[in-house]
Image 1 (tube, one colour):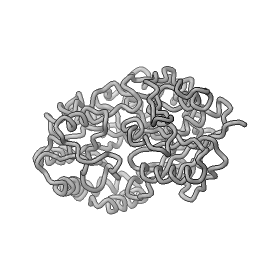
Image 2: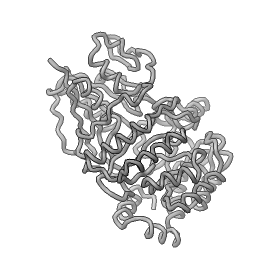
Image 3: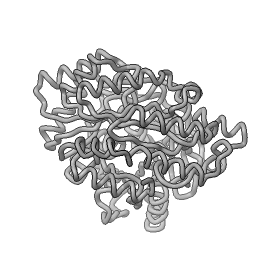
Image 4: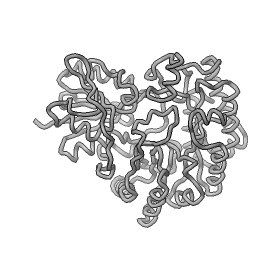
Length: 450
């Protein structure tokens, strides 16, 4: 009998978690790869299909993509599946599995994937001896065995485009945005930089798709699905300057009508007027820049490898070109105090991006930050108990001499002092649609940051 596979991306079930609902590129890429190998694969994305029903008996393997937001619901779903039909193999992968695989070494899970999933899941399906599949924790009679490190996929151009046909693309949305239908893309994997809070889910080696391959996918998304705006989710899109420029040149030469955002951020030390101008020419209207902190010493400790002057310079260039910016900051490093957090708030206001985000620091295992806390006995609670980057108190670790309520208050102060300024309110009204402002406002109220 032919193997049938179901891949699931669960919602958090919490409207506070995010106002961004975009295609789950990880499982869609895996689905496309499996189908290219003639393995029937279905996809359920509960973020857009909350009432979808899983027909467990129809599948031989059911896989879950798990992060800290959907961990709880995914775990309950896995338990229900095994109760319904223990014959079905349940496998898990995704960011949380890569950073904390030990969480999943339980009876309900048959394999935990700590690697890129396309080739690994195909081998899991087709190889008789599953221990030959590198990069997984495999359930056996004695518990779980780790099969060993897996090499990264070298040539990303060989992978098929994500199986967007497996989901209803018109149900995805994002705030802010310019147009719909909206979608997303990853043009590279991995990051060579050393930020101490990042666990490098896709490895430290940067691997990029060719400019031609990237633009072919953009053309395909536009022509096949009517996509009008794309969010580029790379960690290091502009690392190779010539490649970034070539992507822009090809979009121009093909006259592709598309709007672009870079929500994951572009490193300011890889940017200048020339590249930003090209990005503007191909429809880029919003980019994120991520100084993370307003304190120069903390910037060095977390190894950002650029300084505030460069951030300010790139912000000015974006303003000249009419590219809107989204400032990304983190609050709650263990070596912070009230004064350094206030410096971050002050620098955010000085930078004056159109929108800003103050995320809670989460010390993921396998990061230098986590190892630092572990050495000093500073880890208080497991990360899978965290419900959101954006709301609530920090419970994973102690922040200097501050109480967790103090940190939560300072995050609220950051948002309130940033947005509740007359000039900023006018700026928001001139920059974003009423639709976006209403949704962003509702979200801010839900997470109690305004």
